[in-house]
Length: 383
Image 1 (cartoon, rainbow, N blue to C red):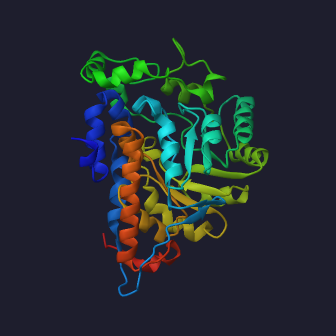
Image 2: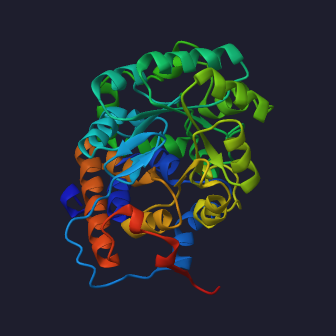
Image 3: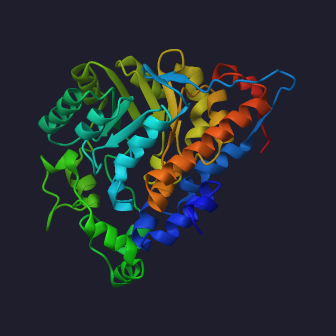
Protein backbone atom coordinates (compact mmCIF):
# COMPACT_ATOMS: atom_id res chain seq x y z
CA UNK A 1 0.00 0.00 0.00
CA UNK A 2 1.35 3.43 -1.00
CA UNK A 3 0.30 7.02 -0.49
CA UNK A 4 -1.45 7.14 -3.86
CA UNK A 5 -3.68 4.29 -2.67
CA UNK A 6 -5.02 6.38 0.24
CA UNK A 7 -8.44 7.82 -0.53
CA UNK A 8 -9.95 8.29 2.93
CA UNK A 9 -9.23 8.34 6.66
CA UNK A 10 -9.21 4.56 6.95
CA UNK A 11 -6.67 4.15 4.15
CA UNK A 12 -4.28 6.58 5.84
CA UNK A 13 -4.77 4.76 9.14
CA UNK A 14 -3.88 1.44 7.51
CA UNK A 15 -0.75 2.89 5.91
CA UNK A 16 0.33 4.45 9.20
CA UNK A 17 -0.17 1.10 10.94
CA UNK A 18 2.14 -0.53 8.40
CA UNK A 19 4.87 2.05 8.91
CA UNK A 20 4.80 2.70 12.64
CA UNK A 21 6.02 0.41 15.43
CA UNK A 22 2.97 -0.91 17.24
CA UNK A 23 3.49 1.06 20.49
CA UNK A 24 3.53 4.37 18.61
CA UNK A 25 0.61 3.48 16.34
CA UNK A 26 -1.46 2.48 19.34
CA UNK A 27 -0.55 5.68 21.17
CA UNK A 28 -2.19 7.63 18.32
CA UNK A 29 -5.03 5.18 17.74
CA UNK A 30 -6.06 4.35 21.28
CA UNK A 31 -8.37 5.80 23.88
CA UNK A 32 -9.10 5.42 27.57
CA UNK A 33 -10.46 2.33 29.32
CA UNK A 34 -12.87 0.42 27.01
CA UNK A 35 -12.62 3.10 24.31
CA UNK A 36 -16.39 3.52 24.16
CA UNK A 37 -16.14 7.32 23.93
CA UNK A 38 -13.47 6.99 21.24
CA UNK A 39 -15.92 5.01 19.09
CA UNK A 40 -18.91 7.19 19.95
CA UNK A 41 -17.10 10.33 18.77
CA UNK A 42 -17.51 9.13 15.18
CA UNK A 43 -20.78 7.20 15.38
CA UNK A 44 -22.50 10.24 16.94
CA UNK A 45 -22.54 11.87 13.51
CA UNK A 46 -24.62 8.97 12.16
CA UNK A 47 -27.61 9.92 14.34
CA UNK A 48 -28.17 13.10 12.31
CA UNK A 49 -29.07 13.17 8.61
CA UNK A 50 -28.41 15.91 6.08
CA UNK A 51 -31.43 17.25 4.17
CA UNK A 52 -30.20 18.74 0.87
CA UNK A 53 -31.86 21.41 -1.23
CA UNK A 54 -31.71 21.10 -5.02
CA UNK A 55 -31.76 23.48 -7.98
CA UNK A 56 -29.92 26.20 -6.08
CA UNK A 57 -27.47 27.05 -8.84
CA UNK A 58 -24.34 26.34 -6.82
CA UNK A 59 -21.23 27.04 -8.90
CA UNK A 60 -18.71 28.57 -6.51
CA UNK A 61 -18.50 27.45 -2.90
CA UNK A 62 -17.06 29.67 -0.15
CA UNK A 63 -15.65 27.51 2.64
CA UNK A 64 -14.16 30.36 4.66
CA UNK A 65 -15.05 30.98 8.29
CA UNK A 66 -13.96 33.34 11.06
CA UNK A 67 -13.32 32.00 14.53
CA UNK A 68 -11.48 33.48 17.50
CA UNK A 69 -10.91 36.56 15.35
CA UNK A 70 -9.02 34.47 12.77
CA UNK A 71 -10.11 34.28 9.12
CA UNK A 72 -9.69 30.72 7.79
CA UNK A 73 -10.03 29.56 4.19
CA UNK A 74 -11.44 26.25 5.43
CA UNK A 75 -13.89 25.50 8.25
CA UNK A 76 -11.41 22.99 9.72
CA UNK A 77 -8.13 23.54 11.57
CA UNK A 78 -5.26 21.28 12.60
CA UNK A 79 -5.63 20.84 16.35
CA UNK A 80 -2.58 20.97 18.60
CA UNK A 81 -1.35 17.43 19.27
CA UNK A 82 1.64 16.12 21.16
CA UNK A 83 4.81 14.30 20.09
CA UNK A 84 4.49 14.74 16.32
CA UNK A 85 8.17 14.11 15.49
CA UNK A 86 7.76 10.74 17.13
CA UNK A 87 5.27 9.82 14.40
CA UNK A 88 7.33 11.27 11.53
CA UNK A 89 10.64 13.12 11.64
CA UNK A 90 9.07 16.23 10.03
CA UNK A 91 6.50 16.52 12.84
CA UNK A 92 4.95 19.93 13.40
CA UNK A 93 6.99 21.39 10.56
CA UNK A 94 4.94 19.32 8.13
CA UNK A 95 1.70 20.20 9.91
CA UNK A 96 2.40 23.93 9.81
CA UNK A 97 3.47 23.78 6.16
CA UNK A 98 0.22 22.12 5.11
CA UNK A 99 -1.91 24.43 7.26
CA UNK A 100 -0.34 27.36 5.43
CA UNK A 101 -0.90 25.63 2.08
CA UNK A 102 -4.63 25.42 2.82
CA UNK A 103 -4.95 28.76 4.59
CA UNK A 104 -6.10 27.45 7.92
CA UNK A 105 -5.12 27.53 11.58
CA UNK A 106 -2.89 25.07 13.34
CA UNK A 107 -1.68 24.66 16.88
CA UNK A 108 1.43 23.78 18.81
CA UNK A 109 1.13 21.70 21.97
CA UNK A 110 3.02 22.13 25.23
CA UNK A 111 4.15 18.60 24.42
CA UNK A 112 5.07 19.61 20.88
CA UNK A 113 8.38 18.58 19.37
CA UNK A 114 9.13 21.78 17.42
CA UNK A 115 9.27 25.18 19.11
CA UNK A 116 6.37 27.55 18.67
CA UNK A 117 8.89 30.36 18.06
CA UNK A 118 10.34 28.62 15.02
CA UNK A 119 6.95 27.93 13.48
CA UNK A 120 5.54 31.37 14.24
CA UNK A 121 8.49 32.99 12.46
CA UNK A 122 8.24 30.72 9.43
CA UNK A 123 4.48 30.64 8.82
CA UNK A 124 2.20 33.63 8.49
CA UNK A 125 -1.04 31.89 9.45
CA UNK A 126 -3.18 31.92 12.61
CA UNK A 127 -1.48 29.86 15.28
CA UNK A 128 -2.75 28.43 18.56
CA UNK A 129 -0.65 27.52 21.57
CA UNK A 130 -2.24 24.72 23.54
CA UNK A 131 -1.00 24.43 27.09
CA UNK A 132 -1.72 22.76 30.39
CA UNK A 133 -2.13 24.29 33.83
CA UNK A 134 0.91 23.49 35.98
CA UNK A 135 1.24 23.50 39.74
CA UNK A 136 4.02 26.05 39.23
CA UNK A 137 2.08 29.28 38.54
CA UNK A 138 5.28 31.05 37.49
CA UNK A 139 5.76 28.39 34.81
CA UNK A 140 2.26 29.08 33.47
CA UNK A 141 2.99 32.79 33.25
CA UNK A 142 6.37 32.18 31.63
CA UNK A 143 4.87 29.94 28.95
CA UNK A 144 2.16 32.48 28.15
CA UNK A 145 4.71 35.29 27.95
CA UNK A 146 6.85 33.28 25.56
CA UNK A 147 3.82 32.58 23.37
CA UNK A 148 2.97 36.28 23.25
CA UNK A 149 6.57 37.16 22.31
CA UNK A 150 6.40 34.58 19.51
CA UNK A 151 3.33 36.20 17.97
CA UNK A 152 0.89 33.40 18.78
CA UNK A 153 -2.68 34.47 17.95
CA UNK A 154 -4.76 32.32 20.28
CA UNK A 155 -4.08 30.84 23.69
CA UNK A 156 -5.84 27.50 24.22
CA UNK A 157 -5.94 26.03 27.72
CA UNK A 158 -6.79 22.33 27.93
CA UNK A 159 -9.10 21.84 30.91
CA UNK A 160 -10.00 18.13 30.67
CA UNK A 161 -6.55 16.75 31.49
CA UNK A 162 -5.75 17.63 35.08
CA UNK A 163 -4.72 14.00 35.32
CA UNK A 164 -3.90 11.47 32.62
CA UNK A 165 -6.51 9.09 31.23
CA UNK A 166 -6.20 5.33 31.65
CA UNK A 167 -4.84 4.38 28.22
CA UNK A 168 -4.50 0.64 28.52
CA UNK A 169 -2.95 0.12 25.09
CA UNK A 170 0.04 2.17 26.29
CA UNK A 171 0.21 0.14 29.49
CA UNK A 172 0.36 -3.09 27.49
CA UNK A 173 3.18 -1.91 25.22
CA UNK A 174 5.04 0.06 27.88
CA UNK A 175 4.86 3.19 25.75
CA UNK A 176 6.20 6.31 27.46
CA UNK A 177 8.61 9.19 26.88
CA UNK A 178 11.44 8.36 27.50
CA UNK A 179 10.77 4.85 26.19
CA UNK A 180 10.12 2.20 28.83
CA UNK A 181 9.07 -0.61 26.53
CA UNK A 182 8.07 -4.16 27.35
CA UNK A 183 9.80 -7.00 25.52
CA UNK A 184 6.81 -7.22 23.17
CA UNK A 185 7.01 -3.49 22.56
CA UNK A 186 10.73 -3.62 21.76
CA UNK A 187 10.06 -6.44 19.30
CA UNK A 188 7.59 -4.24 17.47
CA UNK A 189 10.26 -1.57 17.04
CA UNK A 190 12.68 -4.18 15.71
CA UNK A 191 10.32 -5.31 12.95
CA UNK A 192 9.80 -1.72 11.71
CA UNK A 193 13.46 -0.76 11.15
CA UNK A 194 12.79 2.19 8.81
CA UNK A 195 11.07 4.08 11.59
CA UNK A 196 14.10 3.52 13.83
CA UNK A 197 16.54 4.60 11.11
CA UNK A 198 14.61 7.83 10.56
CA UNK A 199 14.38 8.42 14.29
CA UNK A 200 18.12 8.17 14.94
CA UNK A 201 19.33 9.88 11.75
CA UNK A 202 17.31 13.08 12.16
CA UNK A 203 17.23 15.83 14.73
CA UNK A 204 17.29 14.56 18.30
CA UNK A 205 13.84 14.20 19.82
CA UNK A 206 12.97 16.96 22.27
CA UNK A 207 10.07 18.84 23.81
CA UNK A 208 11.18 22.46 23.32
CA UNK A 209 8.17 24.06 24.99
CA UNK A 210 9.05 22.21 28.20
CA UNK A 211 12.78 21.52 28.00
CA UNK A 212 13.66 24.95 29.36
CA UNK A 213 11.46 24.35 32.40
CA UNK A 214 11.24 20.61 33.12
CA UNK A 215 13.85 17.87 32.93
CA UNK A 216 12.24 15.03 30.97
CA UNK A 217 15.40 13.12 30.06
CA UNK A 218 17.10 10.06 31.47
CA UNK A 219 15.37 9.08 34.69
CA UNK A 220 13.06 12.06 34.39
CA UNK A 221 9.34 12.31 33.87
CA UNK A 222 7.45 10.11 31.49
CA UNK A 223 4.44 11.62 29.77
CA UNK A 224 2.14 9.85 32.22
CA UNK A 225 4.06 11.20 35.20
CA UNK A 226 4.04 14.67 33.64
CA UNK A 227 0.24 14.62 33.77
CA UNK A 228 -0.01 13.19 37.26
CA UNK A 229 2.87 15.07 38.93
CA UNK A 230 3.31 18.40 37.12
CA UNK A 231 -0.27 19.37 36.30
CA UNK A 232 -2.51 20.90 38.93
CA UNK A 233 -5.77 19.04 39.66
CA UNK A 234 -6.85 21.90 41.94
CA UNK A 235 -7.27 24.31 38.98
CA UNK A 236 -10.42 26.40 39.38
CA UNK A 237 -12.39 28.99 37.43
CA UNK A 238 -10.69 31.71 39.47
CA UNK A 239 -7.30 30.48 38.22
CA UNK A 240 -8.47 30.52 34.62
CA UNK A 241 -10.05 33.97 34.94
CA UNK A 242 -6.67 35.34 36.06
CA UNK A 243 -4.97 33.70 33.08
CA UNK A 244 -7.52 35.16 30.65
CA UNK A 245 -6.80 38.63 32.03
CA UNK A 246 -3.04 38.04 32.01
CA UNK A 247 -3.08 36.92 28.36
CA UNK A 248 -5.19 39.89 27.28
CA UNK A 249 -6.07 38.43 23.90
CA UNK A 250 -8.04 35.61 22.31
CA UNK A 251 -8.33 32.88 24.94
CA UNK A 252 -9.99 29.52 24.41
CA UNK A 253 -10.84 26.62 26.71
CA UNK A 254 -10.48 23.15 25.20
CA UNK A 255 -12.40 20.34 26.85
CA UNK A 256 -15.61 22.11 27.89
CA UNK A 257 -18.64 19.82 27.63
CA UNK A 258 -21.47 21.16 29.81
CA UNK A 259 -23.76 24.14 29.28
CA UNK A 260 -22.94 25.44 32.74
CA UNK A 261 -19.20 25.42 31.97
CA UNK A 262 -19.77 27.03 28.59
CA UNK A 263 -21.66 29.88 30.26
CA UNK A 264 -18.92 30.25 32.87
CA UNK A 265 -16.28 30.47 30.13
CA UNK A 266 -18.20 33.31 28.51
CA UNK A 267 -18.65 35.02 31.88
CA UNK A 268 -14.90 35.17 32.61
CA UNK A 269 -14.05 36.64 29.20
CA UNK A 270 -13.05 33.64 27.08
CA UNK A 271 -13.30 34.22 23.33
CA UNK A 272 -14.08 30.60 22.52
CA UNK A 273 -14.48 27.03 23.68
CA UNK A 274 -13.73 23.70 22.05
CA UNK A 275 -16.25 20.99 22.86
CA UNK A 276 -13.95 18.02 23.25
CA UNK A 277 -13.41 14.83 25.22
CA UNK A 278 -9.74 14.73 24.20
CA UNK A 279 -10.37 12.24 21.42
CA UNK A 280 -11.79 9.70 23.88
CA UNK A 281 -8.43 9.58 25.68
CA UNK A 282 -9.50 10.88 29.09
CA UNK A 283 -12.88 10.05 30.67
CA UNK A 284 -14.30 6.99 28.97
CA UNK A 285 -18.07 6.92 28.94
CA UNK A 286 -18.25 10.70 28.55
CA UNK A 287 -20.56 12.21 25.97
CA UNK A 288 -19.48 12.83 22.38
CA UNK A 289 -18.86 16.50 21.65
CA UNK A 290 -21.19 16.42 18.63
CA UNK A 291 -24.04 15.22 20.87
CA UNK A 292 -23.56 18.31 23.07
CA UNK A 293 -23.11 20.83 20.27
CA UNK A 294 -26.68 21.98 19.67
CA UNK A 295 -27.44 22.40 23.36
CA UNK A 296 -24.34 24.52 23.97
CA UNK A 297 -24.71 26.65 20.83
CA UNK A 298 -28.29 27.40 21.86
CA UNK A 299 -27.07 28.48 25.29
CA UNK A 300 -23.97 30.55 24.49
CA UNK A 301 -23.50 30.71 20.73
CA UNK A 302 -24.30 34.42 20.68
CA UNK A 303 -21.66 35.17 23.32
CA UNK A 304 -18.69 32.98 22.51
CA UNK A 305 -17.24 31.05 19.56
CA UNK A 306 -18.09 27.37 19.87
CA UNK A 307 -15.77 24.91 18.14
CA UNK A 308 -15.71 21.14 18.24
CA UNK A 309 -13.30 18.25 17.75
CA UNK A 310 -13.34 14.48 18.01
CA UNK A 311 -14.09 11.66 15.61
CA UNK A 312 -14.19 13.67 12.38
CA UNK A 313 -13.44 11.42 9.41
CA UNK A 314 -15.53 12.87 6.56
CA UNK A 315 -16.55 16.17 5.02
CA UNK A 316 -20.17 15.39 5.91
CA UNK A 317 -19.16 15.23 9.59
CA UNK A 318 -17.83 18.76 9.27
CA UNK A 319 -21.00 19.97 7.54
CA UNK A 320 -23.20 18.53 10.27
CA UNK A 321 -21.20 20.31 12.97
CA UNK A 322 -21.27 23.60 11.07
CA UNK A 323 -25.03 23.31 10.53
CA UNK A 324 -25.51 23.02 14.30
CA UNK A 325 -23.54 26.22 14.84
CA UNK A 326 -19.89 25.23 15.27
CA UNK A 327 -17.62 28.05 14.09
CA UNK A 328 -14.90 25.58 13.03
CA UNK A 329 -14.01 21.92 13.43
CA UNK A 330 -10.72 20.63 14.83
CA UNK A 331 -8.87 17.69 13.26
CA UNK A 332 -6.57 15.35 15.19
CA UNK A 333 -6.13 11.76 14.09
CA UNK A 334 -7.44 12.87 10.68
CA UNK A 335 -4.04 14.44 9.94
CA UNK A 336 -1.85 12.45 12.34
CA UNK A 337 -2.24 9.18 10.44
CA UNK A 338 -1.30 10.83 7.11
CA UNK A 339 1.63 12.51 8.87
CA UNK A 340 2.84 9.17 10.18
CA UNK A 341 2.31 7.55 6.80
CA UNK A 342 4.15 10.06 4.62
CA UNK A 343 5.02 13.35 6.33
CA UNK A 344 3.95 16.60 4.65
CA UNK A 345 2.83 14.92 1.38
CA UNK A 346 0.53 12.68 3.40
CA UNK A 347 -1.05 15.54 5.33
CA UNK A 348 -1.40 17.57 2.13
CA UNK A 349 -3.13 14.70 0.34
CA UNK A 350 -5.54 14.18 3.25
CA UNK A 351 -6.40 17.87 3.42
CA UNK A 352 -6.88 18.11 -0.35
CA UNK A 353 -9.29 15.19 -0.17
CA UNK A 354 -11.20 16.77 2.70
CA UNK A 355 -11.43 20.10 0.86
CA UNK A 356 -12.72 18.31 -2.24
CA UNK A 357 -15.30 16.48 -0.11
CA UNK A 358 -16.44 19.73 1.48
CA UNK A 359 -16.87 21.48 -1.87
CA UNK A 360 -18.70 18.51 -3.37
CA UNK A 361 -20.92 18.04 -0.33
CA UNK A 362 -21.78 21.74 -0.17
CA UNK A 363 -22.88 21.63 -3.81
CA UNK A 364 -24.97 18.55 -3.15
CA UNK A 365 -26.52 20.34 -0.16
CA UNK A 366 -27.38 23.37 -2.31
CA UNK A 367 -25.21 25.65 -0.15
CA UNK A 368 -22.91 28.35 -1.51
CA UNK A 369 -21.36 29.32 1.83
CA UNK A 370 -20.98 27.99 5.34
CA UNK A 371 -23.56 30.55 6.51
CA UNK A 372 -26.21 28.66 4.50
CA UNK A 373 -25.66 25.55 6.62
CA UNK A 374 -28.35 25.85 9.27
CA UNK A 375 -30.12 23.47 11.66
CA UNK A 376 -32.99 23.26 9.16
CA UNK A 377 -30.63 21.26 6.95
CA UNK A 378 -30.55 18.44 9.52
CA UNK A 379 -32.91 15.84 10.93
CA UNK A 380 -32.24 13.67 13.94
CA UNK A 381 -33.01 10.04 13.31
CA UNK A 382 -35.32 8.46 15.93
CA UNK A 383 -33.32 6.26 18.28
